[in-house]
Amino acid sequence: MNKVLLDILVCPVTKAPLTLSEDGTELISKVGGMAYPVRDGIPVLLETEARTLNSEERLDSGSVK
Image (cartoon, rainbow, N blue to C red; front, top):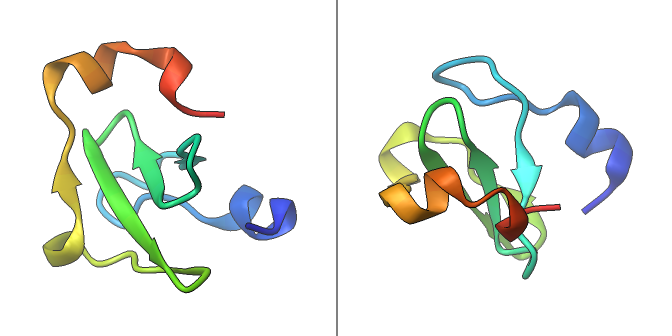
C-alpha cells in the first residue's frame, strides 16, 4: 500500500490512524479495535466489513508495521 495513502487514511469510526498488517491484508485501528480489509489493493473502510480485533491482537503491537 502506498505510504502517502496510508498516512492520509483514518478509522472511519474513531478518526484514529490506521496501520497496515504485516501481511498487508488489513488496516488496523487499535483505538477502535477493528481491522478493515484490503481487497485487491483497495482499503474497504466500511464498519460493516470490519472485523473486531481479539484481546491478543489489541495488545500485540508487533503484529502491525
